Amino acid sequence: MLRLKRSENTKALRLSGGERKRLCVALELVNNPPVLFLDEPTTGLDDLSSSQCMSLLKLLAAGGRTVICSIHTPSAKIFEMIDTVYVLAEGQCVYQGSGSNIVPYMQHLGLSCPVTYNPADFIIEVACHEYGDAYQKPMVEAIANGKVTRWTPPGDDGKVTPTKTDTTSGASSFYEMEQFDEEINPKLLQAKSSWWMQYKLLLCRMLLQMWRDKSHIKLKFYMNIVLALIVGGLYVGVGRLASKALFNFGFMFTIVIAYLYLPMMPVLLYFPSEINLLKREYFNQWYRLSSYYAAMISAKLPSMFVLAVIYLSIVYLMSSQPLEWFRFIMLFTIAFLTALTSDSFGLLISSRLSLVNGMFMGPVLAVPLILLSIYGIGYGKDTYISPIMRFLMSLSYLRHGMEGLVAALYDYGRGDTICEDTEMFCMFKKSEFLLIFLGFENMHYLWSVFCLIGFYLLFTISAYVMIRQRLKKSSSNQTFAYVLQLLTKYFNFTSYNY
Image (cartoon, rainbow, N blue to C red):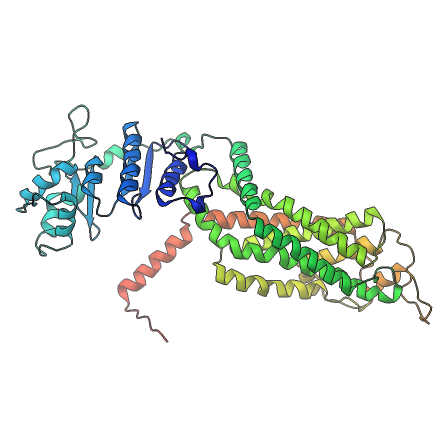
């Protein structure tokens, strides 16, 4: 019916204009809606493609659906396919009825449509004051701004619906409010497909989109390898030498910084544009927001996991960290949780801000998190830190990431590190002395894991709430608009450009 079988393996980017329009119609038909809304389905198409598109819509309407679409200056051929026409001019209705009744309607107002003229072009020209300014107001009054149904084609029973009465003049043919007093049944708003089905389909779609973007996959793969080689080259062998213990702490700090910016920045860049697509699909009730959000979170996990394994394996071996599987797994767990938290943190920022504001606020908000993650380190265990600062330090998830990395490499019975022969005093041969020097002697690995999981859940749930509020009209926005309307009405505000 849609004539898209030959293009089923073609990317949407490479479809022709007519194929894209038919694809949009197909997407609208996914949930088999009884009412179909389309915005200018023939715009940008040639005459043949426009006729094919309108024939498709006519076929859908004949199948029992109501198709409502906006069309600018339709041709005579397309105009004949339309059952009911609603003409607007300057926000007011100047005609409502069948296309064949436009000529009698204009004659009723004292205007004769030329025989060679398209009635659609003629009424639009009259509404646009091509024949003077004296006709628009009488047209609005004659049709009662869309409430008169005299020119509307009758239904199967010969009556005009859904009005209660209809006279020759149509003066009493109004849509009465009593007809719409019944409350909408909530069951009608429930999705026909299950949450799990929506989640699976959305997850497959997102994974397919990621797989098709080969250039992005290669870029992330090579970037992680190059970055790992650079970091590993800067910290070669620091993990086994006692004299390089503080350098090894710097190595762990680079892991935290890498997994702050690598997951966060792409989210700040792409999600503000992704939310425009989400608005259209969500308002069309294609799926639940929760299923989309869960699929979006899940689709990132495989690539993040693989890239983390590649990056951490390279830097772990090049920096000569202890060759113990449980330590690598502990380090990987902390680093991966830090990456997930950074991703959700970026999602929280971009869920409420635009692209420009999000790209600015993301790095700005990351600065205090970085500073708090290393505050007080190197002062020893006897250094006094105020309770307020300790509380602020606990609010930085990077701080918990640092503590978890240090615990993974230097706690749980690590053996002595190597002291070089040139060293007269080997202070950090015992890992306990390093932990005391850093002020991490009371840290617990599992506490760091639980804190990172807590921050991840907090950011993820908060981002979901922000997105949901953005997709609906909140009461705060309505209040703000009402206050702004009052101020504009009673006070003279003038905007100046400096």
